[in-house]
Amino acid sequence: MEFSTELIKKMGKIVAEEMVRIMPEAENMRAAEKGMRELVRRVGAEGLSQYLGRVDEAEPLEKEKACACQGKQAYQFRREAVVISVFGRVRYKRRYYVCSSCGTGHAPLDRKMKMAAGEVTSGLAELLALAGVETAFAESSRFIERFLLFGMSDNTLRKETERFGQLQAEREAEWEEQSQKESWLQAHLRQYGKQAGRLYGSIDGVMAPCKGEWRELKNIAWYQVEKVPSYEKRRHHASEVGEQNDLQARNITYHCDIQPPDGFGNLFWATACQRKADLYEELVFVCDGAIWIWKMIERYFPDAVQIVDWYHASEYLPPIAEAVFGKDTAEYSTWLEQARALLWEGQMQALIQDCQRFLRIPVAQKSAEAAISYFTHNQKRMDYAHFRQQGYFIGSGTVESAGKQIAGLRLKRAGARWTEAGAVATAKARAAWLSDQWDDLAARRANFPLAA
Image (cartoon, rainbow, N blue to C red):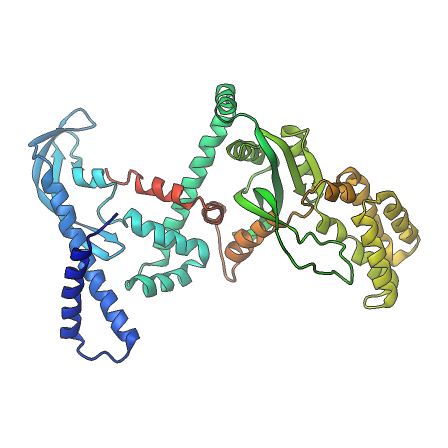
């Protein structure tokens, strides 16, 4: 959208002259900016009002129009309506028809512009939803008033945020339907062909509060990994064990839902197809040791590389060291570093045997049993020396970040009270924003058939 320099200067001159009239000597720049913003907002509201009127008048006048009930809608008059836009409340007049058969009223302009009298416009809806995915609705309402210079209720913010989440759910439902059709999968293969390179997936669950109970919000992260050209090596406890500073995730997309594993599997497969995971020459999953996760991966991608997240695995060691040696002792640090080194090198049999020594110590028995069980069941997924040699990312921090950014920073805010539907919708909207997929939802919202 381009505007001529001459037009901008002309309108700027008018605005400047009016500012000088109402504010000849501003107290400071903040006051001048606030005054000009308010003036521009009001000008925008008036301009939008006149624009809508002209768009309506530009269409040829029809005395009658067909109605969905098979009856006829008769022209009444140019009826006034109000919408709430990014400039505030906008009044406009447009042609109005009423059907003599069903009594339904109809404004062609409203349908054409995909808006409804008394509702917020799609442009404002996008800004409200953006605020709603970032922070609590009551707090978002205060931010909106500061930014737009007019207030909106927290319920309206909630409504628009959840609507964006519902639009994301609709997109995902469409993907699920597509991904179950053999014809679509074949066309998908013909269109894109086999994809060179390596794609990663990580899955995790995080608890979210829903009406007095906690439900597991399951998250998927699809991403690629690239080498960082230059980096400064950092040492961990005087060791490079546990560090992969030369690798970082990029092109990340997140998806989430509160569903049992079977239902979530459909979303997993559908989003995998959207990221062409079914076409990549190499697919790598880095996840924690949850049984449901690996069962789902083996069902859909049995040939994928499976890696248990290094950080989850290493977290089983400190409780053993603390129980046996006591925290902050020299023996604690020595054993922990040796055990972590064995894990880092993928020497799982040696590490399991080392942990078995502590089964005879009552205070360490529980933590040692947990570690031994975890390492034994995931031994093939812990060949970290081999994985690192192949250049694999071995940490699931990408999906861990999804849990923190979606559930932790948004759903678990102090005082939050969610219905399950509201929590899922808000989480899905936030996941779309974090995945840089917001424009797709905004486009859907702009075409949302609000008008009758």
